[in-house]
Image 1 (cartoon, rainbow, N blue to C red):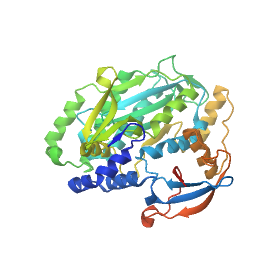
Image 2: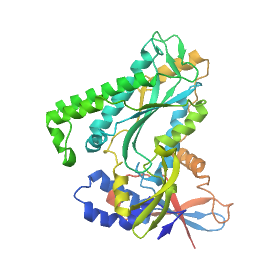
Image 3: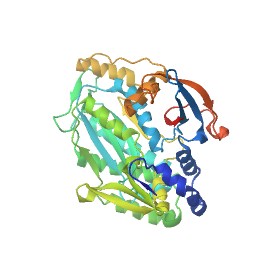
Image 4: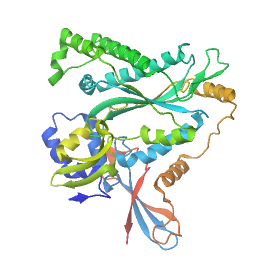
Length: 409
C-alpha cells in the first residue's frame, strides 16, 4: 500500500509489471517492454551509480543512475531543462501563439495501430497548414517558424493524439526585407486552418493506404476493404475538425516556461498519483468536458499500465519538430535576419562543458546542489567509488545524468 507524496509510477510497474507481462505478453511491443523495464530500474542498483564522500565530515552518499528513457517521469525534468537551454537563442522579442491540432476520435484507433505513419502524417498536415495559410497574402503573407510537440494522451490516460504548436506572432516578408507582425491578439483564422488541415491529413491517409503503409488488425480488420476505408474517410471529411488557438503568450519569458512544461511531458507525472492499494491505482485528472473540474480516477493496476503504455512512441520517433524559420537547415541565418529586422542583438550562446550543463540544470530544476554534503551542508562531495550496474549489457554506454541519493551510515 502506498499513498501520496513519494508514490511513483515506478512503484506500479515494480509491483504489477511482472504479472502484466505474463497476462499481456503476446500484445506487448518490444519498445513497451523496454519502457517498463527502464521505469522499474530507474535510479536503482540495477543501473549502477557511484558513492560520493564528503571532504569535511566523511558522510557517504549513494547516487544511482537514471534510465534516461523519454517515457520515464523521473528523467524528464532534467531533459527538459537541458533542451530549453539550447532553445533560448531561438526566442524572438514578440508575442507567441499556441495552436493545437487534434486527430478526430474516429481516426484515433487507426493512429494507435499505425503510430509512426499516422503521427508523421499529423506533423506533415499541421505544419503544411500553418506554413501555407501564414504565407497567404490574404492572411499574414509571411514566412513563419514554429515548434510542434506531439502529445498522445488525455487527462484520463486514454489515447488522444494532438499536436501543440508554439508560433511567434509574425514572420519574414516574401522578399526577406521586412518583419510582418500579426494583428494584436490574433494569429490566423482557426476555421481556415481546420479546413486545410482536414484535407491534408485525409489526403495523407489515402496515400499511405494506396502505398500499403497502413495495417489493420483486430477491430480495424474491416478497413482492409477499400470501400470500408473510403466510408471512414468520407465520414471524417464530413465533420468539423478541432483546431484550437489558445490565448497568446505575453512574450519570450512566458513562452519558455510554458514550452518547458510541454516538450518533455509524459502521459502522467508522479505528482498526480494519489494511492496504490489493493491492486488499484488512483490518480488526479481534470475533466475538460466539465469545465476542467479536478477529479480522481481509480483503475485496476493492469488497466493503468495498459493505458500508460498506449503512449509509448516507436523507437527513434521524433516527437519535437521545428519548421519554417526554425528548421535546422536555415535556422541560424533566418533568425539572424529576424533579429536584425526587430532591432535586437544576436543571442549569446553559452559555452559550457556537458558536465557543467548537467549539474547546473539539475540544481536549477531540483533546487539542490549535487556537490554539497546533505548532512553537514558545508563540505563538498567527491566521487569515491563507482558502482557497476547489475545488468552491464543493458546499460552499456549510458552516461549518468540524473541521480537519486541514498545516505549511508
